[in-house]
Image 1 (cartoon, rainbow, N blue to C red):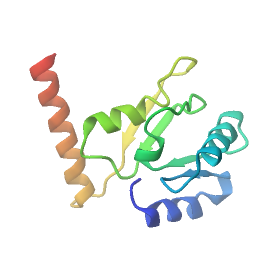
Image 2: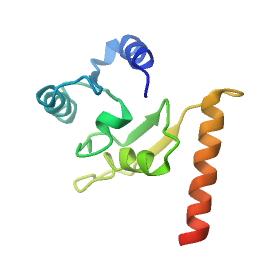
Image 3: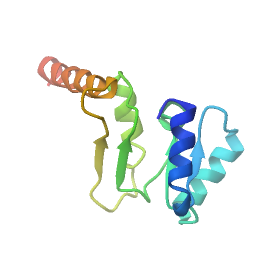
Image 4: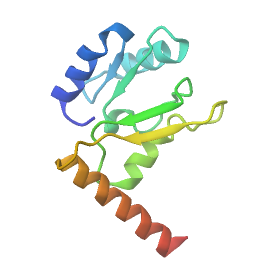
Length: 124
């Protein structure tokens, strides 16, 4: 997710699963602790801002990734998905994009799909 309010509501709604939250405001030390808590099973859900959690994070305990607010940049989404597709991953992974019908997010997901298709067509 991108927006603080969305992240806060996700954390509130998923409180029963002991989520960890990482945003741009999270210190480096707290990010490391959040990843460790998730990887060891202390936390069942990892909620991360795509910018703060999109690189240099290993989340192989997860095999499911749900984008609540995707980036317009397919490479950002691919980098974020690579957090679960890492060396050490032993399970098949699934990445999904959540969008509501007739919403801005639905348009964003459509733009992302078109960009990815165009990239594949041009570069193979």
